[in-house]
Image 1: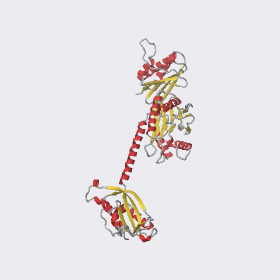
Image 2: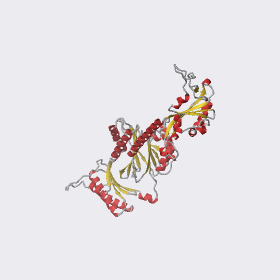
Image 3: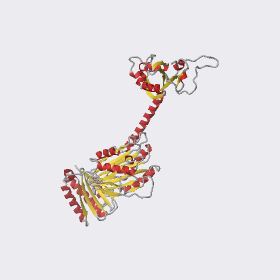
Image 4: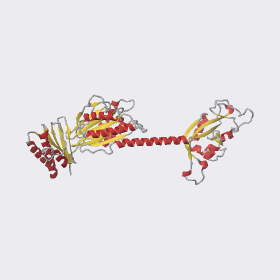
Amino acid sequence: MNITRWGARLAGDRRRSVPAARSQESNDTFPLRDVLAHAPALIAVTRGSNHELCYVNDAYRAVFGARRSGIPARDALPELAEHGLLTLMDQVYRTGRGRTVRARRVDHRGETYPGMPESERRHGYYTFVCTPVRPEAAGRGGDTRGVLVFAVDVTDQVQATDRLRESERRHRQAAVTLQRSLLPQRLENPDDLIVAAKYLPGGTDAAVGGDWYDVITLGAGRTALVIGDVMGRGVRAAAVMGQLRTAVRAYARLDLPPHEILQLLDETAMEIDATQIATCAYAVYDPGEGVLTYSTAGHLPPLVRDGDDVIHKLDDANGPPLGTGASWPHTSGRITLDPGSTVVLYTDGLVERRGEDLDEGIDTLGAALLSSAGEPEAVRDHLIAHMQLPEEHDDDMAMLVLQLPRREGAQARLFRTASLDLLGGSEVAARGRAFTSGVLASWQVGEELRELGVLAVSEFVANALTHGAAPMRLRLRRTDRRLIVEVSDADDHVPRRRRAAADDESGRGVAIVATIAKSWGSRLTDEGKTVWCEFPLG
């Protein structure tokens, strides 16, 4: 095969072959070697099925070093074997069709010398094209006589792509870090519940979502559980999520029913960003009554597996999403939790799949919950594994799992409840004090704490007699960490702590309780109000 003149023909050139490049004034020909020698691409030409090396240009030698012609490419061009091109050249020679290998890293051996440190060796990225070479007279369908290999330097493009990917990776990492920083760094640990949570960002870009969860202790042993999802993606959705989570924590301290919390949150969502819609589920567990009160705003229904292994879908207290300004009021539902019950709150990233019905995903989650076992962390991991999230899932997922454990033996004796209906007139104060002293003694509470508990009951009952209304009720609760005193009555005017003047005959009861107790508070109920305080044990 003669490549010294323009008589060679590359496959795929549909133009008529020109035997020799001629000017209008001269019949001189241009040697092909001279033309290829100054080409910026790396060029090598082989002939025959054994790919015997015929020619390499200056650019090729500058990168790979000098090469000896007349021997098979596997010996003359070992760099092609390293990059898997010899097999490709076989295909090109056999089929007569060109092939391409994109962006392979190539070490510049032509400029190295023995002992050169690795840090000083250069490298680049090249796209290799192998195309068949046929004699001029053979035409497009003629026999292939050799293979021309040329490599184009794409180092700048590869490095630019790498920089873009690294920038996107850092941007995504920053967005995920922001999102995670807005989630609880650690879950609060209620006395009566075991809780586990999980957040998984979706997609591979920087557009994280606005899923969040929270666990909030309300006092008197009550616990608020929250999960939500801001529609849309990106830093803006994460920022709105952070503001809503902060608002929920603030409203939770009011200890209002769940549906009232969501109504307040709806107004806040509109003030934050009227273009952002969010969903939320808010629930409160009261260990004294063993009841979970819940309400949802456009959110997927929580699932409950009760102590008899029956799945309940809590979809009877659902209102419009947050930020819609809908006039339809939210409502609250109630369910009694037996020891051993498990509750799952989740976002749609766990159950929603393209092309599948959402209810089917919820039913699948319910079946997974029914087959789960162990404490919340084990249940959480089982549910995630069972739902088989796609590897490239493009939606965030948040999940909150809580469990009311079964307690037996010595552990059960640490969790006790006693109550007394306060019937009658002023004598109920003395009856309440006697009841408290006897109950706390039977619970083996220390003498000093018994006295403080009796004093708190005395002040609360006196306050209820003066400012409240019948019926009144006293409830004492003990956990493994605290003693809780509650007094309820039918009046909805909650007490306020204030500084009593020297000549005031009232107003000191709450101040006394606030001084002796670790914390105190009050909440409105369907029947009136409840005032409570807590004392640490030990």
